[in-house]
Amino acid sequence: MNAPIRVAVTGAAGNIGYALLFRLASGGCYGPDQPIRLQLVEIPPGMKALEGVVMELLDGAFPLLHAIDIYDNPTDGFAGANQAFLVGARPRSAGMERADLIKANGPIFVGQGKALNDVAADDIRALVVGNPANTNALIALANAPDLPKDRIHAMTRLDENRAKAQLAVRAGVTPGDVTNMGIWGNHSSTMYPDFVHAKINGKPATEVITDHGWLRGDFIKTVATRGGAIIAARGASSAASAASAAIDHMASWWHGTAAGDWASMSVYSDGSHYGIPAGIVHSVPVTVKDQAISVVQGLAHDDFAKAKLKATADDLLSERVAIEDLLG
Ligand code: NAD
Ligand code: LMR
Image (cartoon, rainbow, N blue to C red; front, side, top):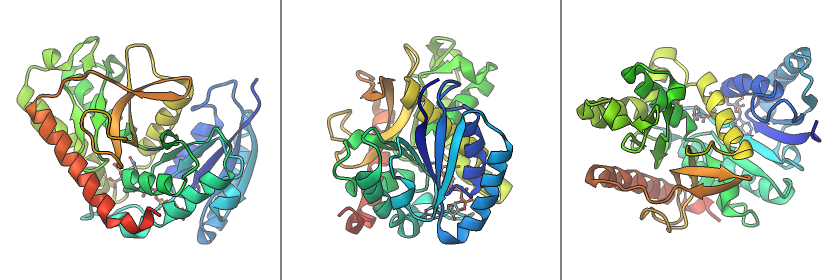
């Protein structure tokens, strides 16, 4: 059994938090040999509900859950944290785009970036889930100048999982048969789910699914607008699938990616890959080894893909303009 690691979770009394914490406690992210200490962060009005969540976590009697502490601010809540899930933020409601949340949610990530910078453990790795996730991660990074730029990611794993599920249903296989599913760009309706390089049972998805009109059309549209479809149906944004994707992202970062496969992670761009502009947090396919991220190299993009990549990078650049004042 390893020594416990400290895992901070913000928005711990919210909907995603409720689905996430029990998976963390049961070993669903870091494995059966890795105990954790949870450091749960809420805003003051959320603390009472958080006390109830803590009672339930205790009542789970999880052997891997060595401690639970609660905080109403990130400076105390991130102290010594090795891993952080930055979930706490307002969700959108029907009729809103995720970018409409930037004025309400962006400022949260100024203080949280500073706290990660100042009090987290040296090996901190943080995932921003709160929307608009890519630009919030950029804000956190800008306010954490001492952290290497690859330590704060935004989540596009839910989009990857959605894309795998759509391809699996269409091909009559199971999601585990779909690999190499890269999401490029923003966690917004401009994202590009790259079906060209995806594989189904080791074969190019474009050979297994011969209706390329569907791949370019309804497939991309379904994945890119899935969050809105769930809000329309459920009256609330995705929660359990989002928590599951957050576990998947952090598990890939912790354990590494499987040989020959990759994961989609929104990472800081330094301008050196695929013509993606520098200074935005952009989803790319990556491999992970020993907790270090490498962008997958050598993927060819046709004109259709190039246009999609440009549109989603432009989307991120315009989100950045809207929060320039939060970048320090
Ligand atoms: P929720 O409203 O159910 O819960 C959010 C929780 O965060 C609340 O308990 C609230 O009190 C808390 N909170 C707010 N500000 C905080 C702060 N500064 N520090 C700590 N806690 C704070 O919302 P939810 O359904 O859990 O969604 C949370 C966020 O995740 C939303 O922004 C949502 O849009 C986003 N989301 C992202 C993805 C993705 O794929 N990236 C997927 C689903 C949801
Ligand atoms: C999602 O993709 O489900 C989340 O980002 C929530 C949303 O607002 O769509």
